[in-house]
Amino acid sequence: MGFAAPIKPETAEDFTLLRRFLHTRPELAYAEHETSALVANYLRDWGFEVETGIGGTGVVGSLTVGPGSKTIGIRADMDALPIEEVTGLDYASQNPGKMHACGHDGHTTILLATAQKLAATRNFSGTVRLIFQPAEEIGGGARTMINDGLFERFPVDAVFGLHNWPGIPAGQFAFLEGPAMASVDMAIIRIQGKGGHGAKPHLAIDPVVVASSLVLALQTIVSRNVDPLQAAVVTVGSIHGGSLPNVIPDSVELQLTVRSFDETVRQAIRERITALVHAHVASYGATADLRYPTGYPVLVNDATQTDFARETAKRHFGAARLDPTLRPITASEDFAFMLEKRPGSYLFLGNGDSADLHSPRYDFNDAIIPDAARYWVHLVEDFLSGNTFAEATP
Image (cartoon, rainbow, N blue to C red; front, side, top):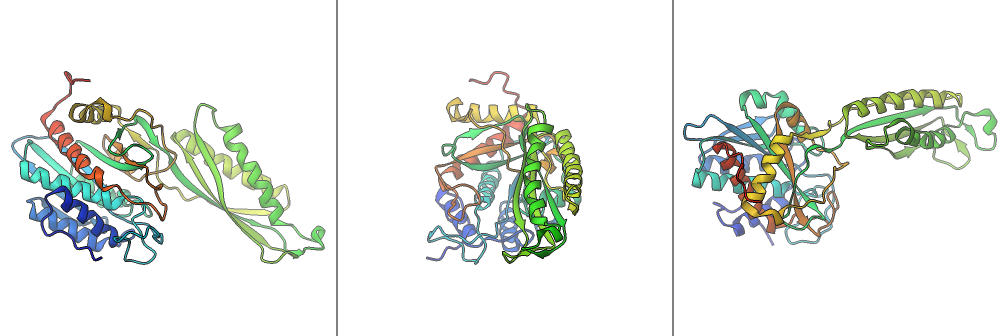
């Protein structure tokens, strides 16, 4: 079955079809050309001022109504993942090796549905900026847009984003104040030993043994160097070395993911990994080359804006629609770069009992699109009205 984008999406059914169209045509980081063009065309049709090419393929749509001076930003990500889809859906990816396995097709659709409603009702006074971002998964598109002058060219008083979350009941809202998602860095360690015959290990410096010992030693960083009341992760996810059982290789490479919720802890772990790797490897007579690419920072939700976002959901959907069980998440998100520049909040919306994010069996739950868009509309209207919910009903 072929899927085409609706010419003028207005109903929930239209936006479901649009989401499924986007799902069939996933595009990877900084290659979201078709998605970006589709977004820009819809926004223009609805009366937004549109700028394209921000940070590569990013789009910003701005709509000003009335004399209000406040400005709010809402962001959605557009990119897919290099994953081969195995859902068997009739709207499965038509681009081999690429898949919307994280729901960014849904996030984009939600924000487009929001744009259509805001343009139709114009029930606010101020400016709303809808930010469609490339390259969240790989490439730090938020940082790229910022470096391209995002907040100087399109200033906002606060910025918000959301992510669907499998395992939370569909349509439930979840909010986290303060550190909500972990920073992520990578350590790449190349251990240089001395190769030789497997029958004569005393004549070699075996990097496989060194690497094996180092893996265990690295586990002491969190258990013995990080405050037990802090959370951190050091995971060795890859080891490569050798090709034959009777040959000791010259070198072995390890790759680590490193995560934490505090910048001081993040830097302390980096220092400890660096010191431990060189000292531990040297004790075996080997040497180490260490590279430490930094990734996304800790995502820190502003307390005031998170409280406002939570109260918006409570006021318009009722307290029963708030999920209180979500805890800080060790996954990472480049919206953290935007929150370093502007106050705001990143919230979570239940996707129900779906496959997990980044699974080749994952699919976005279309049933949550209408309420998610309605939530964004209410957030815009309430934020630009200056509503503080002082008399909000619990």
